[in-house]
Image (cartoon, rainbow, N blue to C red; front, top):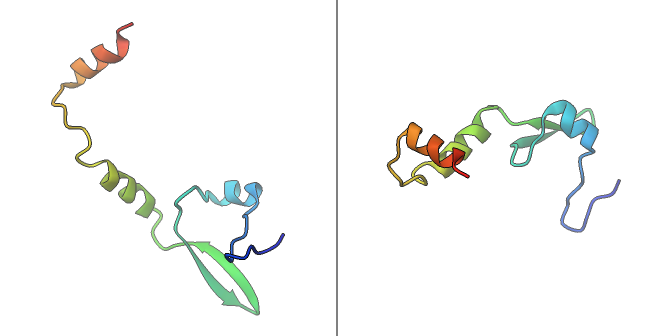
Length: 75
């Protein structure tokens, strides 16, 4: 594994899966005993909050749940 000219590395899929490191997961780096340590950042709910904030106000149509369900069931 190598570091790119931009300082980037690829975290192996096995590690990402085991630790739940999804795209946009906040991480932090620290140095412990002359080694670099990567951890998920403090709050696990930060990603969810950011997604909700991004979606807030996007649905501008005033439809009931029944109306939406009817649209999804139409062929």
